[in-house]
Figure 1 (cartoon, rainbow, N blue to C red):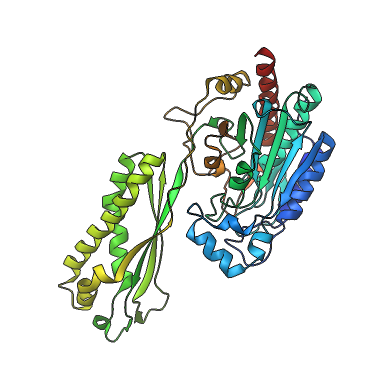
Figure 2 (cartoon, rainbow, N blue to C red):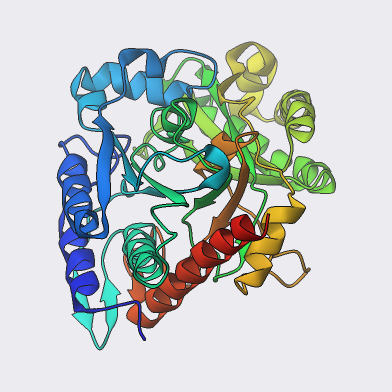
Length: 426
């Protein structure tokens, strides 16, 4: 019997129509609360109750865990930043001990831009189709099927579903998932719904971001030698980091992304100021601690090389002479937790549900998501349908096939029944 039906398809289409673009990437208020309410309404016939639905408190934007970009964006938008980003927790059945609870996490915020919704031949396209409104609906369908088949689900086994914002746009879950975990909406087994090709990860990466900024003096194109050329300087630094630092970062099992570079758009001036963003994804907190000095040393070496190479160039002489003084490194986010956990009992539950752990060389690789905040709070895995790249997440062609969500729903059904069986055998 299929776990997926017409009502599930209609719920997904309704959720996709609602604009829930993260305030990190949009000025207009989104419809996150409305989307959460629609999801809760669909969950009510299963037996779910809303046990938490509220915006984050102002204190959520305090502390070292909050990326600088989030705090700055919140200052720009004022109170409506947090007001537009509520988190919701749903609970199925009477209160049971955490050891007998499975918690799921899914995010409803999306990247920009919001996309038209299309449904053709059981392939549904729209912003959030795979990341992560589609998985959210598949998750609910699987819970419904498990509860219908097994009376222990919702009675002896508790089920919690977190529905959050604050995942996209570099927010890193700091005002969404982090707060719900701290409030105790967790289980013996936690499942973060992200695309993983129906296998699971029990670890994730976490990222740190550096802003390399040049603050010099501009000049006209008639006298380029009189200014500091931030475009050239940052270009040299970007190339040096890609060439020289990337291999060192990769040797630690981490990844380097030389990202956005901006100075200006005009053709007839020398820009004296600009910024270069560099992102580093790391698999452990120990590696993360090594990356900060490695990046800073890499920038210093790149600046020294730039000063040497540009000194003999008339239009670059001033830039060369002042390179070390006008260029600084500022960390926009760093020192965030990493998910890395193993649990033989829960791995046996997953295996009994025919859900396999990604661990081979040819398997998909872990990525950064809100799962990091669950570290140390039960056993946590990342498990979902589809593939971030293959399903066009964050692109204009994002889609999901109904068959993918049906398979995911069935996986959730098997997982809950296996978890119930594990408790019965204990």
